[in-house]
Structures are given as structure tokens and as C-alpha cells.
Image (cartoon, rainbow, N blue to C red; front, top):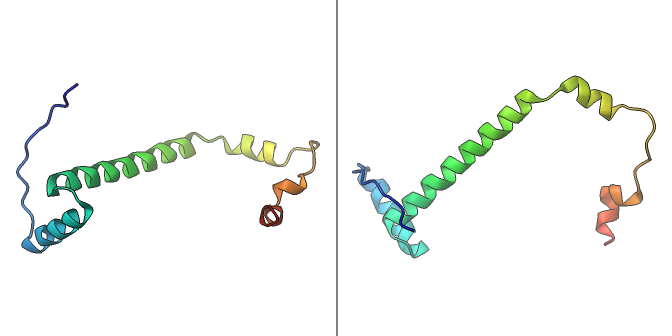
Length: 88
């Protein structure tokens, strides 16, 4: 399977290009590969933020409070507390 690629000229300040050369060399990658991975990480972070914003906006706060403050159920077990994690 081949991935289609697009060629796009990129204008960078000399100082940024110098930093990219240094970092990509230290990373063992080409400048192109480094920039592709950096762009993919940024896109993933922004899409994740958008996903959780959409989820938050769909939230039913009344249902949340009904569930949170409902009567009955079981009390928390000792394993539910942070202090119990230290003993493991």
C-alpha cells in the first residue's frame, strides 16, 4: 500500500531551520520526517481536544448530579481510596 504525498514548499526562518536540523539529526530522522511527525502530533492533540469539548457539550449535567448524589448503593471499598494504593 502506498501513501499519496503532496509536495509543499516551506519557508522557515534560518534560526528555526538550524534548530530543526540539529534536533532531527539528534533524533536520527530527516527534517521532513521530523516535521511530519510533529504535525501529526499537533493534529492529534487538537482533534483530541475537540473530541472532549464535543463530549462535554453533550453532557447531561442533571443526570450527572442525579447519579452522583443518588441514595443507596455500596460504600466505597478500601481499594477505592488512594492511601490503599501505597500499600500495594
